[in-house]
Amino acid sequence: MATEGFFATSLARQRLLRGQDPAFLRLWQGFLTGRVVVALALLLLQLMGQMLNQAAEPWIIGVCVLYLAGTLALRLFAGRAAPSPQAGVQWLPSIGVDLAVVSALQLLHTGSMSFTPLFGLPILMASVLGTLTLALGTTAAVTILLLAWAWWGGDHNGAEMAQRSLQAALTGTGYFIVAFLVQQLALRLVREQHIAQTSRATAMVQQQVSALVIQNLSEGVLVLGEDFVVRNANPAGVRLLGAESTLSAPFSLLARPPWQALAALARRSFRQNAPQVAEVNLISEDQSPIGLHVRTWLTAPDSAAPDASEQRLCVMFLHDLRELEARLRTEKLAAMGRMSAAVAHEIRNPLAAIVQANALLDEDLHDPTHKRLAQMIGQNADRLAHIAEEILDIARVQHQIDHAAAATVALDDNVAHIWREWQAHAAPTRQGTLALGAPGMHVEFDAEHLRRVLVNLLDNALRYRSGDSESLQLQTRMDSPGQASVQVWSDGAPLDQSVERHLFEPFFSSESRSSGLGLYICRGLCERHGASIGYQRAHRQTQTGDRSGNAFTVRFRGTGLVASPDASLFDTIVV
Image 1 (cartoon, rainbow, N blue to C red):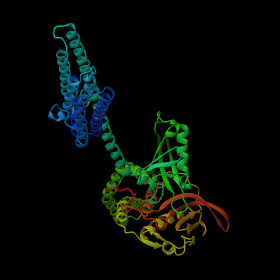
Image 2: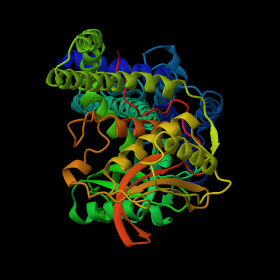
Image 3: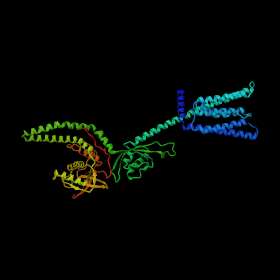
Image 4: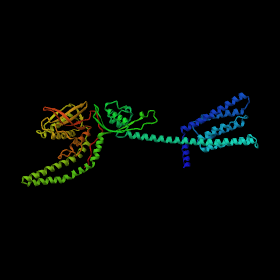
């Protein structure tokens, strides 16, 4: 395993070196510059020695001049490209020249000065920049030269010869140890550099993938610090904040009043040092309220930072509540809806047979009791047929929603027309008050869909009102500039909280004779056009005094707001 690791490291190092790694290239240029400095120092020392001792050694000065010229030439012309780390002729202009120059100086010098320490430069160069073979080969050549000088310069049979040989052997051994340790250190540094480069590349890929995923998430993501400044935000997060699409981080959550609720949730997360989950409503004057399901996570503080408490970040995930509710409704009612639609479709044929048989039977009945029983059968069969048609009507309405073109209608004119048409069916019993308070206001809504919503709300109000002419009211009004609404109010009894929570769910009704699909269809039609429908208790001033009643309000999309062309939060039930 150690051998495999060694070869793998060497291979990685060779790839880095052959690819002209910047760090390796700087080392190469550093050694070349060091050779120039050594050559210049040798020449100056020789010139000073000549001036002080008045002993002429022209050969040594000539060698120093040639060495300086060679090192300068190699630095200028070979400094941009490092040689291969493998042992070969490419190292002769550097390591080979160094060995030759030091050997020449040692042979030509007649004094007691020793130039053998200069062998350290080529040995270091071979150990750091080359392979282990080159390092050991250079050290072996230096050791041989040292032993050769020991044999050449002393008495071959005397004690001085043995001492000089021992000194050369010890010096060579030290060089071998230094060369091996330096080469291992260089390998370790290269391995660490290779790991760092690999980790950096992996981190960059992960960063790019994370950025791509976050940018395309349907849920909003905000990253903010304890100063409530958003450091990063994806497009979905900016959209859910109700901000313009050109808004980009950094920006402060304290800059706009609707965002104060998010800032308060982030403050609670930092204070409690724990994740938070909450539902937040962003309410602004020029837009419809935005309901958000918000989750917060806190990052771990950086212990290496000077003040770790200031380095914490809060990651905030924003979900559109309408989308969450639509998803939950789809999951909750998918199976039940298919089954109900299929059952409704299947019972229509036997139900028609029952109605027809009852009608034929009723023709032959003369006893009043039997007549009353036949009438009860007919009424309940009609009721079953009506429920079956309402269930099947969901699919028809869905088709209308999906294929309805965007339309703009005059609100007051259409509401007045729908009111007159609704009253005309049973004028004596359908009495109420109409108040138009949005003259000239146009809203984005299909006229037929608006009629269907209002007729359903008026029918419900008529069923629960007290009876006088002011007990049912239909009015339009301007809530804010560019924001209109229509409201159906009746003085019925307050709804129980258990009923109110499920008002807009399909198949839910407080009456046994209702299918519970009317308000569900109304909500789907409103959401298709970017509007909202809600219920609340409201007071009205009438001739008999202040009255409390049930109010259903449809708030239309503000002027200039454009919905996504495929926005449909209505549940599909396949028939």
